[in-house]
Image 1 (cartoon, one colour):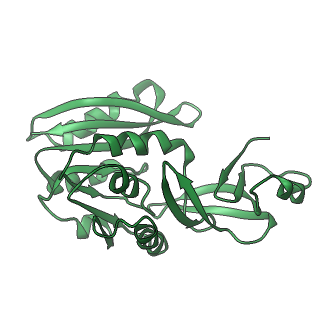
Image 2 (cartoon, rainbow, N blue to C red):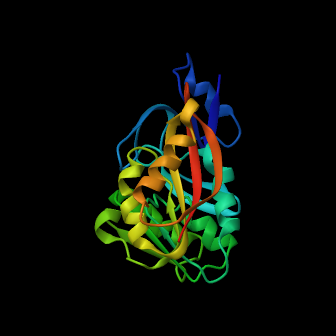
Length: 241
């Protein structure tokens, strides 16, 4: 049986015969089954199998994240990527997190680097409320400015040294917004779920097509995790001149 622990909530992908027995595992107060995660708002489908209460506080890389696993998503498989980005951010950079969620990338950057400002944009009102709570919980309210809305409508133009596109779905449809947000010589971290055979070729092609009027330098290409059979979650780091 595979499971993962988010705060004190055990997440399963399948039903088990006697889920209440899992409450005896140290640190577990609730057992849930996770279904699909849907749409731009990244809303999980959750069934509570045992225990009660799906709100928790999860600790990762010396950061604290308050969330309700029945309302917002959490991917433990992205932990390494969250810290990789935090370590790349240089002193006094301005960062725009286009799909901020509850602060998955924004909070570690604010805690482990020294940016001058992070604009964290989130479309889901529930995730946005947790984003605001996590900013206070981690004492980074002087660094992160949360913004509620669709990044297409509320992005700060020509403001960013670094743009994070940490969402997989129709992310390529927002590349024009990332380019509008970026300063000359800035960097985009572009995420995509792509078939294994073209896992880097397709996202790089999409970046270059969107930035056809610019000079694009691919700095890094990386598989974050297997997303589904034959499909990878990848990230491309691209410098735009």
